Image 1: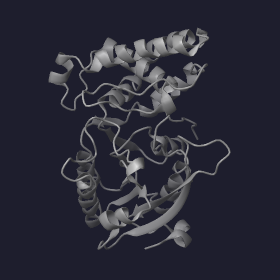
Image 2 (image 1 turned 45 degrees about the horizontal axis):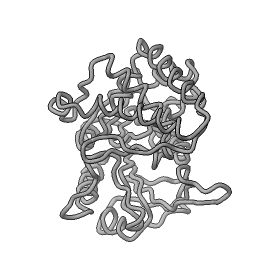
Image 3 (image 1 turned 180 degrees about the vertical axis):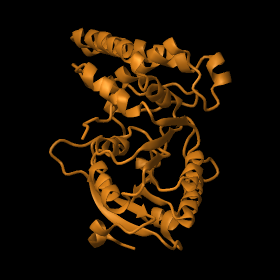
Image 4 (image 1 turned 120 degrees about the vertical axis):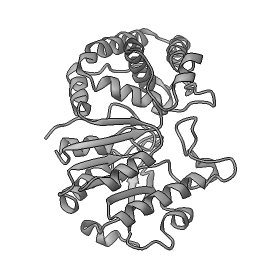
Length: 326
């Protein structure tokens, strides 16, 4: 068994849920040799399945080009030394600053340099859901994104309408540098994986057309309240100006395709009335389970701070039978 962990802090990450999903795959989907994840984010579930050798091939996707560029770049082992040295150089500099103002100035410089790689006119013209950075630029972007993730507020990823990363500095005064061995192991975990950037529907079709596949969907969640509404991490928002639920409804329709095709799939979301209305009401051949997860981002020290969520599955999960609500 390997022990590769997600390299990023990630809002909505599934580190707490990942071991349970790995057990479910072992027990209920052991015949599935292809893993498909249309909303990759930090990849906690992928790495848990990888550590347990639960797939032979994988297809992952995210709509955030900066994130996908990082994964593509770090998946090539020949890039690791340059990425590692760049990260260590910047974090060692960050750790020398004794006051917040100095750290804030450093952070602003790193953020500006990162944004300059992604919002130039040339990049915007070519981007269109493709990774367009040249090798040296891609390595620089990987270094800068890692440093931003480790030093920004709560490890969030957020961009404005212009596509510029705009999360502020966090409260960290010292940040540890990564291990070179860990980075090589992380690279190896992605080496043979098919990595895509774009709309998730391409991987829905891949799921339908791939025999013995298991698909996990961890989309931007339906908000529990207006004040907690954080549905997207990119400028391509997971909502619409005409209807904030439009993209959730579209996802529900695509989930129906997986149900009808008999694909083994699980979708996570909040436990609230709107989720029931959009993803559950009127559907047949689904199994719904209610679970409690401890939030890892934004958690108050010493508090339980749990989040009640739903697992909506296309197949029965025997180990969760006591938690089934539909």
